[in-house]
Image (tube, rainbow, N blue to C red; front, side, top):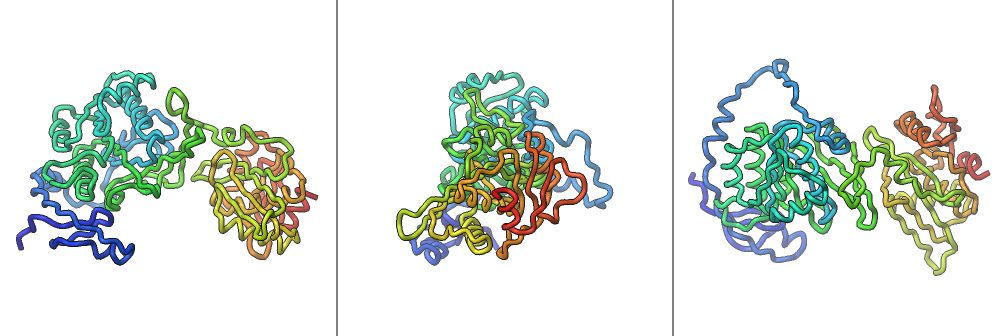
Length: 453
């Protein structure tokens, strides 16, 4: 059956059909009449893909040998941590984040360091002019040794130039602004992003070129373009950070070569991004002394423990319905924990306004911070401060029991390095030699009695 010369595709959800009209999926879900855009079919691929496939043969898994040097350190320790120990040859990495968060700054700094170790590195800027990138490089103090800069948005021209340049690393900034002339749709459309991503994936695997793609995000924070783009790439990194805070967090949501639980922390300075090797000290730098409602908890991000300050403010409600405001934690879980505090510990906070915040713009979502939230709220209500050198850990159930958490030894060791003297942990976690003086508690009432009398 002959291949159709064109298809009609929805630019929002990617629905495709050979007939023109409106998108039935968008009409069912949102009620909107989204017109379908005509896309001409791409020409048949060249023999390159077939040559790559013909050069490989099936072999037993035990015969597959990992060559030495398959990973290259980028020179940025936080980036290497998130990537799983370095950059893998032939990998395709997608970095997304809000506008102005520092994506281009991060990849330009990585390109400079990689160009010193494994030149040449080709930086294709399809969004900015070469002069704009040069201005950023001068501000960051980046020299051009081994780093090639090219302002080009035609991906077919980039592919043709790879034979002459032979780069070890390729950076495309951004995937939404490059295009293939064979497709008549505009750059950034579903068809262009999908086909350009597939073409770059073929180039990365076939030529063993480690490739970075910078991607735009939607207003909801998700990567723009079709979902198939995230399935094509090997690693998806999100560069996150609050607009009014200096810190930035690099987080992996997909990684075929390492863990997706690791994070990298950076600080945005005048000279660019600066690595933060000790994020706990960064988040606790301005913690007030002897302030009611302040508790330190430990959140485990992969293998890295982060010490964060939880703040709670409990005050008399000004109106009939008490308010519950939560920043940096899960709202529903905080409401659940406040109900446990009132029911199991007898504190009448149901008529109080409660405000919970993770200081410094941090985020904590794991259950190990449950006991810290409860202690912070009780401390604020009773106007009794928690000792500043105490760490609080524990998951709390609906019956008021304090459940065990994982990684207690790692969390306590990180707290000891920052000068903490003791910790309140679940009773079932008190076993063996621990780096801090710990007190095990079985219920919320035991924890309140131990910390607040």
